[in-house]
Length: 110
Length: 117
Image (cartoon, rainbow over the protein chains, first blue to last red):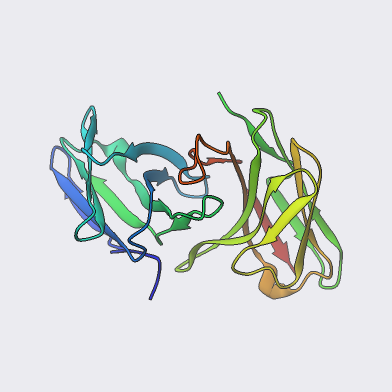
């Protein structure tokens, strides 16, 4: 079983839509969680960390559900510029390792 | 802002050549990582280093070695390049974090697209 699993998509949504991605992780001892954004042929860039109580950054909301071992990312009022691949990243108790999901591709259409 | 610099954006090499990929970070981070990214497989960890001269194998170390002689520099070496090592190589760094149970976020270089012919 993979450490981190994501639906690869693509999610095709119109501008202004709300879209949500989920990511499941297998190690219940995982400590840190992140969402990264990756544009085509570019490096991943941190979008937001995910905290136990959930957190929001503008149009983006991240949630953590430890009982069910998943994290989610909600994007409200989608923009064309949100089109990218979103990577779920988990850091388990072994602090030197990060586990990446394969990414969820989002296409926002005019 | 943290800057992680990879020496080459694109590289073309021939089978059997020895290849060096260089990575430098300017934020005094303890941890440095080398990943490769292939379509459908996501990012896979090749090697990481948590201190100068320290290294640990990641998930796919075969055919690679690394060197960390200075804190800011982490080199990936392909001893004898093969066509199945054609990939995007990403270097990353992070600070150690406040406890052994957590780690700070990863910062990536812009990647090296390596083609082995």
